Length: 306
Length: 192
Image (cartoon, rainbow over all chains, first blue to last red; front, side):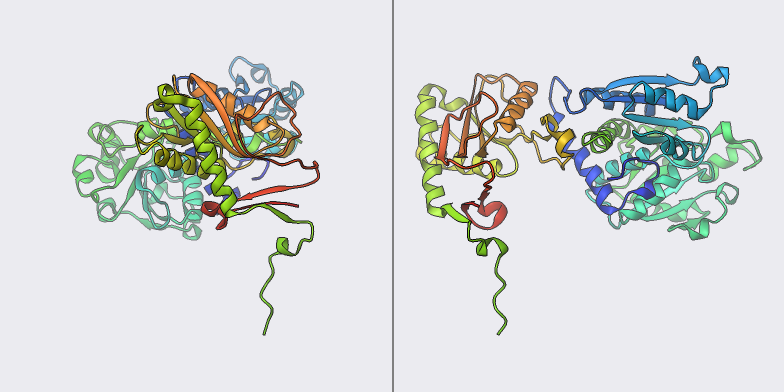
């Protein structure tokens, strides 16, 4: 394992498999226990450095670190010296001077965690940077697929929606390709990034045609906060062409699963009856996220600190 | 004719086999009898064996199987599990992270049970300490005992085994390698 986790592309097949296996063992070790706490990272300090709003990722990292007995400091840009104009670098150096062994960073600027990693001694974990990457989300998605379907190699994964702005999609494409899955992206042409031809994926604009041969359907959130241009004519039209409703879910193969990284826009990209169906892994993804993040923290921080 | 490839260890002049397959078999049989005797009729039904990965796992399986034979299945099958102690080690910082092994706690848990921890080699005692820490989080056994195939001395903690296969005085420079068919394809204990 490398010192940092900045991109899903940093993980080769061996690293990715080690993280998923470790998460599975942690799951098994804690199953059915009253005290879900391990002493592994006692005395280590993990800082959650969040410049962007987040519910599940921040809480998940916080809980993961606490379950491993690390000390956790939550840092939100609001209410800190950042609002007085302190730079990312100075903020990071301040946190490091206080003894942070790992910095979990979310930032609205793509590449912020990469810069951070150049400045600090400890480990940096990318918890979502702009429209770039969100590697732990990809890991928990891969873990969820493996738990549900028993394998990743050769699994047909369809990712639907706003690929252009989605760090979840980018990290998932990189990681799932490493793990041997076949990926199809479905999106309006306006929501596909330039250079999609060089990605290891197939691209389609016809959701119905793709669904009949999908083992996994991963719906992406329509990111209202990034919809600053007319990417599609109306929410209704998007929902009709690219939304997953009960009718579309019915054409999926029998054991196919439906995933969503959350937060959902019910009725927009995913219908409520689909989100609450037995095929949906949305709640499972959240609890799997905890195990995967514990595995990442253990593997990055458990050993020798530099 | 090319010479058959020699295993690196088999040409090591210092390597000596201290236990072979039949000796290991006899030791397992003896420890199984001892466990039955010490537990007594009263507590035999409460027996649970927990192996410490990697090689404690198969040893616990073998002990459970022999106990079932010697008690003529009178107590039913002894629950067997494994308890991985990696996340409880106190030397992770100095020796680095390592992949985890499986933890399988038998159905019904360990509350009130007569637990026997099983490992291959007892050395510093730190593995056993970590295992006791791990057990404390899983439940509250009535009794915890320790069975090891080899006790090689050099304890760093006040820990002793209840059942010892063989006491093997060693120097700290020597290595004790336990090989088991389930994992290594052969049964033997080698010192070098």
